[in-house]
Image (cartoon, rainbow, N blue to C red):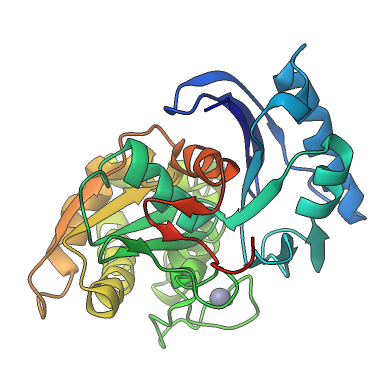
Length: 319
Ligand SMILES: [Zn+2]
């Protein structure tokens, strides 16, 4: 198999890599996602420039294709990102314009099923017929492999688990506009707001800038800052509600956690998660991804070769 170009379009970063058929990353670059794009072209042009840079001297038309994993929701049939809660544009056509530019097939998948494919081919999903990939970073999302097949739904958004409803006490508002969603409490973008809300409810006054970032809050918890232990219990109770819902929805034998919030804080978050997750079904093995945050990019390289994968024919009938 020829190498492919894989693109991971996140709310915070765009990463583009040239990846061989066996998952070796030959070259990788990243850039910040345009913070306030005014048109879809602001995003597509940035990706096109990065694809050119990564391909180097090699003609892109000689590559097998381009695969894009994008923070969803997506319509994989049309190659479009739709109403992304963390990017302020209602629709971003990606596959069409980029395919036109380079003359190769461009395939698009929600970044969470992409992460599951990355784990299935190159990570701890290998040989596991039933697992759920959960990423907790800017937002929260999931990718499900059930009975050896990836679960996609109508348009490729089957496990948008970040929008599971997990709380009625604080009613934190999610990027999607609803309240009480898992992502509105535990994702990197929302942790500081939830912490601020929690402090107000408990009459705790915080001084200093540390509370404006998840890393500052978690560091304060590690250092035993007064009240932070109680916050971490509440945070983990809500986080475990989301994970418990994943377990009863999909009955996985393994859960692979990924995303910056988990990767940077697993020492703190995993023991607490274990304390509060439900045991209605036997507890699956819960582990942290060992692909260094590259699972969605590697998954994008899998679909770049074509939608027919070992995980089943993705979006059968569309090719
Ligand atoms: Zn939501």
